[in-house]
Length: 440
Image (cartoon, rainbow, N blue to C red; front, side):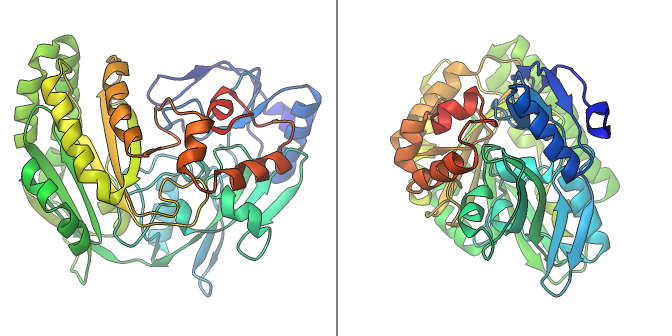
């Protein structure tokens, strides 16, 4: 028995939010590309579907399978830092947290990132994880090359110069094209960001939205349902000096208020929904204005310990304010009780076939509910607003769209499915979720 098979086990799998579970026939953790190739061939011979999985931070069944689940736990670490090309090549199972801290030690950084860093690099990029940015796009848009193992065991190097047609679609591949084993990211010398966080009224934020986006490199805000209150965050490059939040004040804001007390508030709201509007009014006033300066990953990301379920849609940026106002009006007139803030971010257009920002400047509207709270009524009402504006659902977050709808909002949808047909004609990497969103 080879090392590959010695690492093969059976166990149930559950995602981070707990809303998706699967019981794969086998789970494998290959420690090399060669072991992965052997594992895929054995699964194919045994008639098992195959899905790679990261840390389970997606809210959809992207990685669910009753066949073979590939865990990337042993495919971790940095392969190479190329200071001439300003790139880093990293194994696919490496958590973003480890990548960020390793880059910082080398005096390097990614240009932009999302607001959490627990995901693996392959999981985050395959589902289109993004932050917010006027000029800098998603993590996937920072990819300069990737290594992909296809259904027949072929190992492909993909970039703008090599297998360019595959590279054009595989940067956000949903696990449908093969198993990514390494990714090469563009990096730059580490820099400082100054974060300015402050409360602002909903009416002011929406009235000044375009100006706030234009004047800041990274702008986002959170609206607290049942209130007219928002919390805004502006991140801009700074000459320094670094001035991180104080240990006590930082702990109060990021741990006590944003996680500890918020956890208690959500638990109370789930038990007594009628209390949610009052809790929201208190919560929206609890966070005070603050400014701090630090290296990128310490500004872009923050701990998220309160578990939730999320839906997010990307809209043409010019449609964002109307959608937000309609969303607020819907919540105000409905019996819904919403304990989580609504998050709003932006991104420039990019050139990735299934990117939610493909070919158009985008604004993202994300809605959340505390884990264990019934979310269908809220999410259905939100989705109705978003789809009327040709919104594109985040691939890793709750949605009900199918291939027919998605082909209508992604001009390059057929380009992606054609590459999939070529690389995986027998759908070794298929599952029910991909069948719905991509078609068979």
